[in-house]
Image (tube, rainbow, N blue to C red; front, side):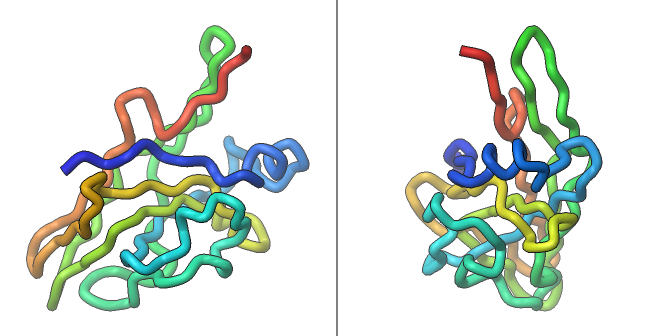
Length: 148
């Protein structure tokens, strides 16, 4: 399975400049969405606007999980946003999804940051009962912002 690159929501950079995101201090979560979701509509702004999030069942909790070891680091004019792989453990049934979304849990409106199609076939991905679904950022980070 090969995931597509993360796509940044249109409002993200503007919101970051306006103080809506503190990339060093805020808490960012990763949530899972089903195939019928509108989460790849990059003009959306808040988690509440996204449809078809995975239900709270089988080891998944609506809202997703806190990203661990988030980093926002500048090197030679390029800033990289990164985090550790996120692991979801299926219990009592399967965790089935097609998309992952990173959002800012600290912001009052749960502002969305980036979304990813998890299998570029496209197809659903599944962790069956007793197994895990691991979403690993690219070796170069979730995304970078560089000078022109």
